[in-house]
Image: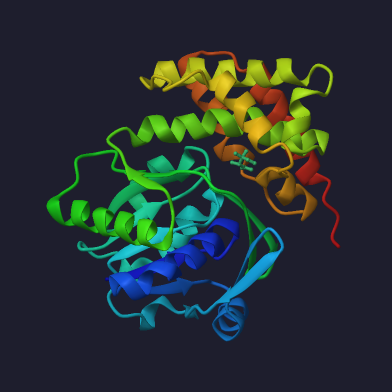
Amino acid sequence: MHFLLVGPGALGCLLSSIVNNGLAVTGDRLTLLDYNADRAEYLTRQGIVYQQGDTGKTVSVTATSDPKHLEHVDVILLCVKSYDVAASLAFCGPLLTETTLVVFLQNGISHLSMHDHLGRAAAAFGTTTEGATLLGRGHVRHAGSGVTYLGFLDSPNDHSAFLLKKTQTLFATGGLQVETTGSILARIWAKLFINVGINALTATLACKNGQLLTLPGVDERMQTAVNEAMLVARAEGVEAMDDPYLATRIVCSKTSENVSSMLQDVRNRRRTEIEAINGAIVAKGLNYGIKTPENSRLCRQVKDIEAGYTVP
Ligand code: PAF
């Protein structure tokens, strides 16, 4: 099987490193696709540095920036940021055949409506609680182990189901804790609730995840943001799997020393995923006539920060 991982950011580098452990056992092949030709060339030459604690190891990878010259790809692991999904699928255009499965691995929920961009390919979705921090080009720190869930939103055909099973096997052989689930939508929302409660607050307050539990007045804002998201989820017909506010507090304390992905983006003056997280709650709230003032406030604050980025 030929796997193609698109987007060598934090999650992409982490998955590439881990999946690489499994390739020799499963006999599969992994190629990285990066629109940035310089970086693709760099990754092929230098490999990816996977760091856990103080120990690092270099993992050899093959990266390309030219999808036209790739042999048939069975599974595309789409690890780009949510706002890059449409452009990345267009870039992968020639590879989106009726026997290809695209596995979406974004934060938030805006990628769930990308069917029009899939060509003839099928879609599966994944969500993970693995912690990854990009320390530099092709250099990732595994900030904490978690669980990865994979599943379909609609009933898959036999071939797509087979490809997702193969993906699970490769991930598991590489060392990930991974499950396929019939409730991927609920899993995606479970992660969304946590991102709604943590990411924008840490980005606007410039604090680590754990500080959200101790800074005055912040816990209340976190609870309000998550509660607004729950009302929207209910209107969408999604029932929460556990208590989302409690789950968010647990993640804050388990990842107390983590710098959230959104704060990492802000610190590096990168575009954030605010639209796919709190912005998606505000947009869906508007559709259903549900008020979401805390999520609106967080969106405004993060967008103000983005608007203030100065050219380095
Ligand atoms: O986006 C992130 O940073 C992570 O999803 C989480 C769970 C908030 C931990 O930092």
